[in-house]
Image 1 (tube, helix red, strand yellow):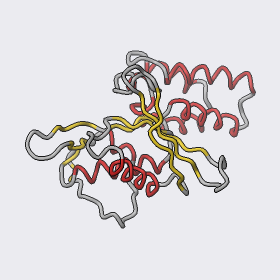
Image 2 (cartoon, one colour; image 1 turned 60 degrees about the horizontal axis):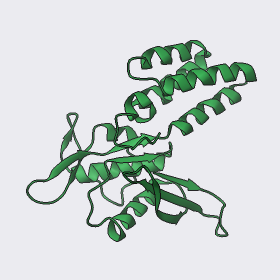
Image 3 (cartoon, rainbow, N blue to C red; image 1 turned 90 degrees about the vertical axis):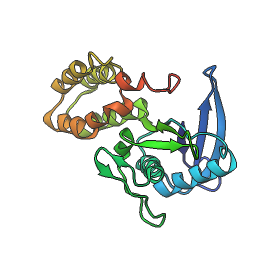
Length: 218
């Protein structure tokens, strides 16, 4: 898991905090790193340093959990693309990217990416997924409801209950809970959900994430 805090140090830089979870479900710190921004370049640099200094003899992670930062998603997707080299993903040939080239890959790419781990014969092929934090998703939608200015506080609280029910629904009730939420929203907010969050349901809705190797992290 990774997240970054801002303005908590005299350097006025982002402090990127990375933690892991062991098989007893205890959280342990992996690394702390100052970065200038939550950009793809920053996360790419962090990943390179961790690989060189800490995980040089370990398999690649099977799951990365983060917020909705585009930089994290782009860096993870670029890493998957580089590892895939010229493999074909969903009928599209993925070529390795030059390091100087701007990273502009969609985080959704990870849904199809398979990263090769190991060397030589007997290579293990594993999927690397980018899971998005459900708390960040819910908070962003709540902010949208406030900024829209058409939902009073009590009304927002009712809608937030619908949001939580949708995000935490099981696979059999996911569509029903989403439809119930959309019926409570103005057309603009309906479009906002359909465009920005419905396509990413496999990355943050528990109907999907409860099946990922995330040790209960949401």
